[in-house]
Length: 357
Image (cartoon, rainbow, N blue to C red; front, side, top):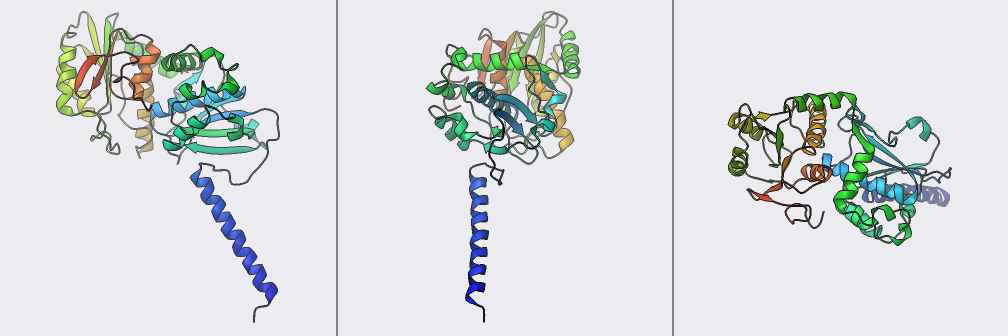
């Protein structure tokens, strides 16, 4: 027979186990991965945009939105800002700090209180609504706060009256100007990628660069992408747009795409005019082959940088092209390839940017 004390002990143990499981479930639900609570031990706070192996981060444009959001939160709270992206490989192989050092020194985080939070898609949209009025430090109150998110925050955080002084610099800037300002002040190509860019530009030999970013969505080059953005049957409209620039003495044509078939078709249609960058096409968050994914990571960063320098730019309904257009800085000779058509657009055009972005 089990004594009353024995039954009480077993009951207490079961309650402890259930409590731990409940805490684990809550942490998973709300994106908190540090299960051991701790209190900040220093007066210095740091916000780190992080994208680690095993965590869903989104594609390159999603990560750009996330790190800009974390930068703004750090700026609002006068906290430190760092970037840690090692999925599919270390972003520092392709990008380096410019005006301020955003590299994370893990040695300096030892013995500090840390927490990891993931706000992807709906969770990120809920967070940005909260940060229109709430204290950011109530959400991120550890010494080192690792944050993964993929939503645009500038439109929301600028409304927070608690940070009107710290964020007064962005009051008169558009969303695109905020992105371009932060990106250009903080990001530079590494020496290796800069050489690749200069090598590409030498091939233009002073000719005007006519560019298009053609996002197709699900296709053999992106089998994990379940969303269709454009149809191959509509590629003829891009080719027709390029025909007036089919003059090797005056122009060079560059197309970056998520579909190898588009890449091949453009080269075949405009021999002597079309130029390309090396590398495979791969989605940096979905490709299972790590080597291929890393090569694709390098290519999308280089291609986006090239797009931001083009004389004429056509973009698809995609963050990669949208961000490049913002950094390019002008709506002059900007076109949108949406619904199979190529039309003139600008930064406020409905076809340039979705309303719920």
